[in-house]
Length: 426
Ligand code: JFZ
Image (tube, rainbow, N blue to C red):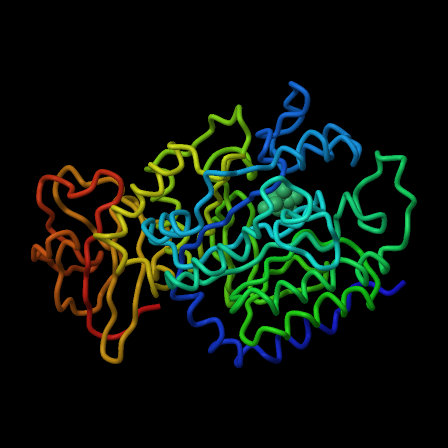
């Protein structure tokens, strides 16, 4: 068997320039919603009174649930009657998110859309019978949110050729290539032809596969011109952007597009016992931190078996939206900070023909009212607070530019000070 084609990675490098146009919206967007939703959500990650796993979408694997039991305990119980795609997408929009990526099929193999290649899907196999992917695709289209699919291409714990299910002895195994031909490739093709414009295809997780299987999965993404893919199709595959999982890198990778995906709480999929919600402060500062390093933030939420988010999640998204309402100019379309570590917070930047704008995100408001921008020697044209546009005095010295601040921080989490300077920075 041949390994995943290294050629694919090569082609990508040669196409780097052409990619600039297609990556433009994604680089501008900075902030997206990730959604893990599946039949595991019906029981909140619980199996017959036990919570087998840290991350609910892995419950079938961790509790070694046979396919037949998973059907009874989860598939048959999936009936999210409170789900409303418009409200859901509206919340992403309110948070300031510009795109949404959702699990069309996770490792459990269950299709959250009306698959025409496998009856193991939300319309044919659950009491709910609604194609929730179609509803979301339409709501995103209406509300101007770019829409993308997560798809587990290697692991499939339901199909006899899929990877990962070593516990259900009733499975009569077939080859992985058969699984690709019968299920994965046709499902992906369907997702990319019957759901309107698809902005992102988010592969997960790479494992070894034949060149034929790799090519067959990969080629389907040509069905949507301009589609953006992550780096998790095959081991050698770079895709258009690099995925960081759960953690923010100390420095962003140079010359590459990248994204940090992270659950808003502890688990990706809804888990009843999950109390690990990140604070509003952490979430806003994460967004700022990632933007200051040049990356995107794909923040995951976990709809319940009812089809709604917990109030803890809704509240946090709304608070992020409040902050974005005042400050989003410092995030959308910004690029990485020209500075290394800053004592008081982070910086993002935008460049124009004759000058640059620095957005200083102050986490720790200086007690003496003096904010030093170390090493900045460009001529300052203007400085003001983002919130309310109050003009601020600056002074320049060898150490850099010092901005004089009012006594009170406009925002305890992150106040933005805008500094417009002459010329470029790097
Ligand atoms: C995968 C999934 O297994 C998980 O359920 C979730 O969907 C997450 C977003 O992605 O988990 C991974 C995949 C890759 C790595 C870590 C976790 N990785 O490369 O470090």
